[in-house]
Length: 300
Image 1 (tube, rainbow, N blue to C red):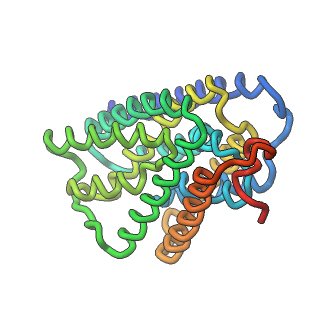
Image 2 (cartoon, rainbow, N blue to C red):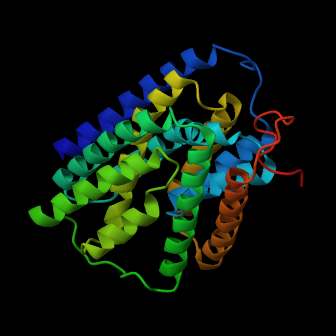
């Protein structure tokens, strides 16, 4: 109980610090007075709504941004990390309070993810555009594959355990560190986390507070570094936050569960489309006459 209470307090205090840091950054540069567009707010609501139900937000957000040509590729990861941070804090508060899991396992796995996220953000914030495009494309394809195989019943349904023995816990700590680093490259952690914890024999429901607590703290840890590098779209990130928090509250407190099988197959198709378009952007030779960001996706 003490560890759970400390985690909740850390989430709240980190979220407040994150908001103040973001406000300082937003005051610097251009377009600081422009509010997010309705599309940007809608993307935040929809992606975080389904994120709360376990679908994940990175693949769907990337697909939406590619579809509407909203965010330049080199700003994509930073925008998602910063914009989804506060909505994921809301998710974490709901699930850590509601779902029982061994507090030592919960706290240690979240700590490993945060360390991985801090390490990964330091690398990703300095990468040029093309490696980011290729990495995110691979992550999207992997996410689509994981989701499709889950739908086909390839992965185990999971056990009933709410804790892990020492050997399995060490394995999970290493895996969570790696997932935290990959998150900073735009590769979501929800699908791999569900698979890993299921293979280790845990109740899949116990993965939610771990995933969301990890996601919240490591996103904020990485978000600070993306803020320092100014490598994000301020309006789009704000749209994710302002639209995302209501989406989380509706999904977590009102809807709670939906028949998601058909929706997940639709998401698989959309994610594959986004991965294909981003790979196309990375492979083709940019036209020097086109300003950076406008060659990302042809007009639809």
